[in-house]
Image 1: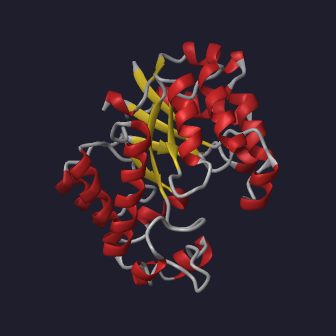
Image 2 (image 1 turned 135 degrees about the horizontal axis):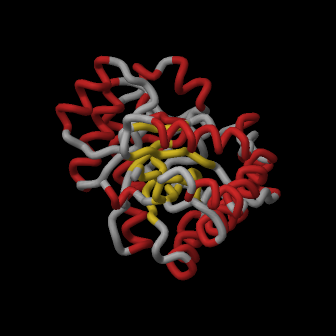
Length: 260
């Protein structure tokens, strides 16, 4: 039987995002989430998660492209703009080789440290907002170094380049066999999710992750993200009993990163 991790990104981005993710777990098929520890609501929302959803798998959504860093901006000159915020993703991905991996790793350590302070435990896995940790070989090496230090899995990389494969193999860091990114934006439909599940059931890979972004849209989300209405659509789909029933027909069991 295939194992499927449905991970909800962006926990802690806003109260509405966090509420939506908790509902996608208690009422739907989400079994894992990752928290954006540099966002102001994150610590409080994690406390609510621990109380209301103690069995939900929780990792850290390492962030370099949204909001302010936890470390002083002066320590992160390659990562922050003159106003002290992280550069947005357009600037970040235009020249990822200019990002100092040691600065990224230092900020990630701070984000993981805050997560541990709030939860009393280590993250059960790591991934990255806007996939920023996979933007260059140096950043991927920094991510793998952190994962080894924490002895935790990571999200499977988006790209399958020879360099990426070699770095993963040499690191021995655990990760799902494959990542599905097709349930997003205009493709976040019930029909598309069923197609994803059928593909997973027929694939040669045993452990899959589907990336999701469910949310209850609140005013803060409209301020900080351009991805809004589709999040509520994702929430409705992920909590639809028909999806859970369809999943049971595909010989796929839901899991968290603890299965790795």
